Length: 423
Ligand code: KE4
Image (cartoon, rainbow, N blue to C red; front, top):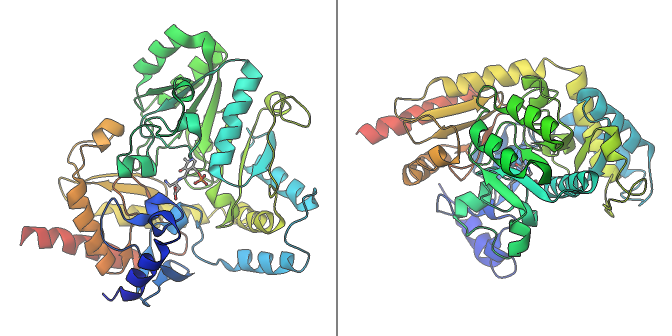
């Protein structure tokens, strides 16, 4: 496969951009080789600068639930471009989007739009501290909630992929406000609440972990978090930036029947445009300025282009719930044929093939995966026109644009890899 243009672009990019990328996970550090510089996306496919075409299972790390350039998003962007790109003032569309988010995710009685998942989780954490008057936050090892100072403790995603030291650049005092526990360990959470219950502002969790690879909640885990938060007056924050509108139209909270106090969302709601949100109980959200004392702001929050894309995406999902049947069917087909010795975790249209024979239920078991073998697998698929996330500790995503032929090609290529290992 010719990747000379990507190689040249990477060399040039490294002169002005750290690592040549604007987000570390894109650098292929977890798998080696040259990150592909992308020229365009169409449906389920990416086309790189050398003209190579790939079936895309990264989907911009989750946002592209309907594939690249879905017509309704393109049309919405074209229409809004005629009116302007940013006003720094309220618009009717922002109300429409807040109402639509609340309709699809009713626990979000009030919503504040921001520009990234990191902004959403950072704001939700500050709000939880402001509302409860408490300082401590509980998170889970291997979960990633964006690059918020105090949440970069035992974080997943790029931090896990690069094996970075915990929270480099984060003041010790900030990191000490965070208690990181094993994902799916109810006993660890119970013990922590027994010791610190009246100091914990919030428990933040990916209800289906995606940033250590895909790890579902153990039966009863989310329910235990809900009960413990209620008992001790802490807020349960579900970080649905990845799972929101992906694992179900109402997110993981609908799939598992959990009502959080706060939720963060992002990715899918912008269909590829930079937008995220946090929201939840009215009595909590009314602590946010300008109504309450907890400050949070953003020049481009509620940006007309991003909001128009969001309205088009969520409007389509509201009108076409059958999209989720397609996502489930394609994802099930993709993950049905994996040999002994490999553990596949999947929830809806997010999945990970772990190179370990043992069940993967938390970060410790995820880390038992053979990352060198995963890297070989990644490149074998890449050479075969299949673009997975370049890390064992990330989730893969299926979109509604992935055809049966795409899935068959991928399944065949996966089978060829394992056959090649046996030769
Ligand atoms: P952003 O700030 O990257 O928009 O969102 C942070 C975030 C928050 N919460 C969850 C559950 C997330 O998955 C993320 C971001 N996810 C990663 C992929 N694992 C984004 C990819 C990247 O860092 O480039």
